[in-house]
Image 1: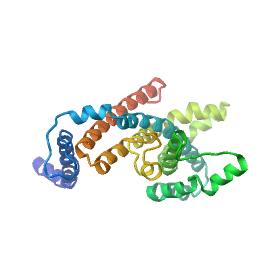
Image 2: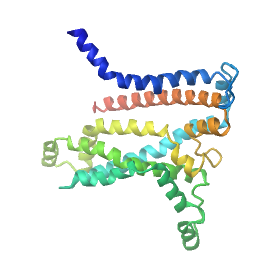
Image 3: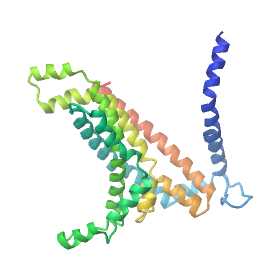
Length: 292
């Protein structure tokens, strides 16, 4: 009976297992192998060069820029999207009715095409767009949004924050709905102010949902490509050159697949280690404050 039950479990899990082997395990092994070669994506033959690609990647300005740009983007994007999603969740949670309808409305940008939204923003913020003409002529503000290192990074962060706000607001709204209202009633009887209720009651009880959105948003910071590719191409001067942008350029622009595989492996290691470390810090912070 036990063997038959185990066989049934493996049978139902087999589609995912086959999917994982074909689209994850095999490509991962192939990527490790390619990282040790000088394959140019076209030639039928290639040379085994051991760890030369990894050594070159560590010394490459584009890879170094991708490392720092990721954390700069994280510093801009994570606070932006967490604050905006918290505000949306608070507003929706306070509505007497039609909460689901409003959440769907805020969730729609998440379903929008990154290519389309990026092209719209590129048209709106181009140097000779109507917005920039008005800013220059009426306010004397001469801003080249997509060709300035700081503003280009902030524009990309703002677009992605706009896209993910509704998604994270769903998670935070569920967290708000799970808080017992009797706690707030008891706090009101004790004369607790609104600010104290938020920081001493809401945030601690919202910690599981907030922890989830923080980890998800940090993970997003390591996977930015579409918006950067459409808006800046990684520029100006590597200011928005993400890991995915560097991998794409090396693999499909420079036709250096072996080197691109090495960069992809380095990016995966950096991503994995960074997320684990940040997760441990968040967990320790929650435990120290008694939120876990």
